[in-house]
Image (tube, rainbow, N blue to C red):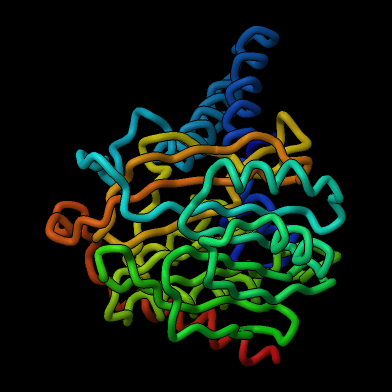
Length: 342
């Protein structure tokens, strides 16, 4: 019965944290439901139609749960195709450092080893800003630093030229996002958005309204961008939630994980309750060279590292369709709900 109730919770059209939290553990609920089916078959005799009905409902729940995570298994097709070129054009590293984490050397060492073109660090205060800045090599000449003590500080470092750069406060004056254009080595320009919206949690926000609105605002910016787009950061949302799926449909951005694996970045402190919260969504001009879930850095998040190849001539082979009117309206409705609550 618990499996059935938990399966139905995400269908409740409310954005309270205690409902939205059930968007997250679909992998865990798949195993829970499947275990419940096996237990019921082994433990009980089927003497009435109610037994068959109950097991049938459990089977449907199990199918539903697995359908949510199926695109992120190796049985599914790639959404972002592999590149056959020899070298990457763009590498990115993102890490939620955990503000209270004082084991600076682990993250500093890893970021140095990865040596990505662009590095994003979230949940960074002034101490983290000082430690990371002093560990950088001289090639990271472009820097956007906005440390905060509220767990929403952001640090962005780039070897590539950044321009038209701004720190925006899309939903709150205490939650920044970084918007910048990046000039690749090929002289092509791309648009990058770095975000870290608030999670739906009682100690943060009792509802998912702010997070959902920020994601929809960025999705609309990506849709209207004249340049290829990369959106990177800790989304505080899983890739298979209704909000993330709507974000993808509206933005027309692609998910590197599909067909490759879950690459669960959170919670690094639990072997059971893990799911993908840190994301790098890209437009169809890119193909994938390498995707890596990095080792533990004493944070509650694992860092994520990718290498991309910029191949705009092949974008039609993986291009997403223009969003339907219903999706655009849903995005507008989520933004309006946020504004009405202010």
